[in-house]
Length: 201
Image 1 (tube, helix red, strand yellow):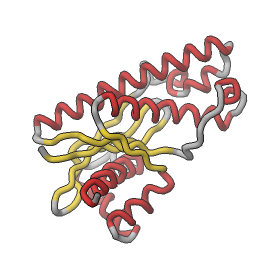
Image 2 (cartoon, helix red, strand yellow):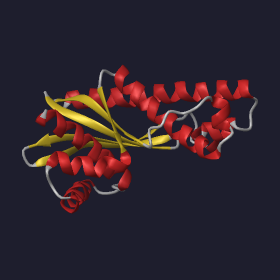
Image 3 (cartoon, one colour):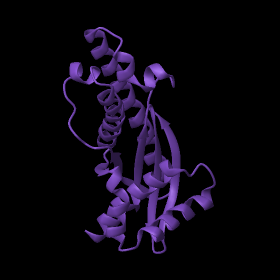
């Protein structure tokens, strides 16, 4: 079985997921999807900490926990389905790469809900954590990369210049057609990095 990896770039309530395989000529995109991580794609669920800010603390805690469980379950289903479809095509999905924000630990819920900046951070972290947990549950090795360091890490891993790298990842999308925004490009780069590190390691 040929080894593949999937990269995730998270937004509020959803993520871009791109699955990549490496052949002798470079990366090949095997799959691309938008994975919704909420039960209803509305502000209430896409921004759980924003919603919880207007609740009593106990209700806020329960609401966020329900959002967390739902996100994990939806991510698990999407990842396992992608793995199953790839196996039928002769590929094994072994790695999930999650792009991180700053990566600083969050304080207790009361402190989060008292800070607008922390609320934004916590919303993103909830969905990143869901993808991480779901990937492990599906049997994938999880790699985490800080988004602001992604391009530098890939150029160093591949030994190519940034301009050439960005041109190559843009060309991947020309074959597929839209959407191929920064979401898909970064998700593809994350998966590519994981596979290259495995080959060189």
